[in-house]
Image (cartoon, rainbow, N blue to C red; front, top):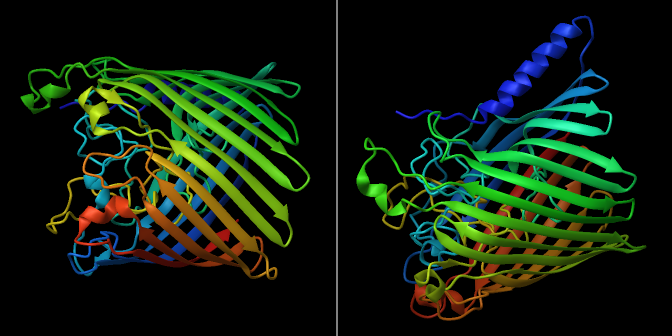
Length: 486
């Protein structure tokens, strides 16, 4: 049996350093600061299958999360930061369903997977509990939330202030620009966040900053090195009160890995599916008097699980703030992979980060997104996915969000999304996904307590027509909840 070594090198170094500091300064008091939030909400979905040939299925559940982010200030130059989730997940064993439903994403896969049948986002081909398969797209992982999790340590890292910068070691958040490639995911409506096991040196010279480092996306068996997924990265930028420009370059590598004789031959087709690719991200932002302009472009080039990869993601956004009116306009693009590309061994789609949200249903829930917790036959999947597991992929979209602060305690908004497929996948009948509009109301009682009630309606386009005779059903979402920040 193989064992995992979740970033042993990093955490061993962190523990040794912590022991040295606490031994050298035994009389120093440790200051503790913290922030976080408690979120609970009810969710009701209608007909995520979009299929007129079957009775509309419903899904209803309540989820909650209590997040705490404590920081331990040991000296003026040494800090340990952590993030924990308590009671994070869905109340009860399984969400209620009137009947099982088929996930359209299973038929129109737009994610990285050599079989082109799975719909996992940000997941290695195999379960992380083994190191059998080579190649991993991203470490965010599949959300397992079919029951409450009493406590989960999300992150823990140490920061050391040195003469020319700060050394950061441990499991830490990774955040870039608008968040289409990586985002910390600390917002109350974000579900996972991007986390890396890293050693980073963060330094600045006036408005310019520099962040070189090394990270481990996955560390596999203790007696193997070929299954380790390592990233080498370099970030350079300039940041002022009104402007931020950033260049990020990373090289990601996981060597070919052949299982030993104790492993079944069922996975032999994945032998020699090594991963080695470059990732480049450019971000620019500038704040003007009434509008904040942002743009981000992410490029991926190399090989991913044996596929020749060349993919591009991009987004541009303008946030207008003329109180009490707010207006967001946005366009985005994620390159697509069609049947011809797959047949040639080419991969041209890397999804946006899962926590980059543009609507309530499309690209966010099961249309298109992760697997159902039950398949079309009503049987439980072996790898159930919690809600909120989708990501923008193979898409060209436009978005508008208009809000108006009626009062300090009532802030309604409407969000409209119009997406097209960048490439029509096999079996598709059109590139038009449809249109979604969301009615969102926030009821802030104070800076610390907010209630929310939202309604989402996705009207599918011709892209989904062949799911049933005639046009597909619409999908609906009603969500309400309360968030307390501290």
